[in-house]
Length: 288
Image (tube, rainbow, N blue to C red):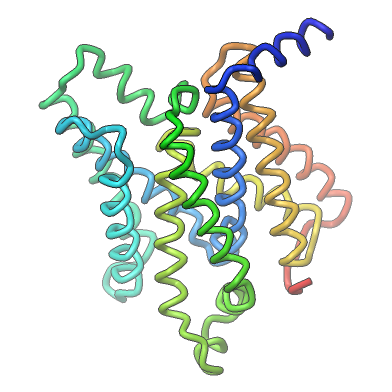
């Protein structure tokens, strides 16, 4: 046991590990805050669709030599989030169909572009790293950490300031519109915030695993508690704990960071699921 602590202490003395922990905690926190809302509104696959769009944008950026610049990837993902929201409201193209179309198209064209215009000999390795996270979070630069900190603070501030309205449109969007809440505007802002979170999370778990950060902590908390506020808080705690645990496990064992974090999330959900069976399941309907 002492050897493990000595090894952890050695790793914690390295700046890149500290950067990874900071970014991992912030991304896990941001992902979990809106995860409960997305799960309850049955928009869980929005994260999956946007992550594929972000992958396609990353492939294009990589071809032109800008693969590390999230400011190139983020506008594309935000535009996709807005389009998904608008198209999803179209009676001819339902939301799930729109997500499926955008998701598959972005993934296919991204992989096609990176193969046709590859500027690296290890195309398969680059794609695998983008899709599953690999060790990219362990190669963060200080400026990337600061960008993540600033954007994470903005996401948390948005959630805190608009908590009551987010709660209202989550449970009864029709009534919210009737009492004067601009549900369309808030849904649009939520979509943009989700796009920001997706871009941030790509360094942590990769494009294909981002939905796990959004969905699993929320579902785990729902197995144990009934209050929206409590579920949100517990979901954030679960998400951060799983991210840190998975990150340390990946460093010590030598496994891919993204997959390890998701594996910890799945284990926690399994535990909460069993506990929830004895508690009689879940039904969220209270603000606090």
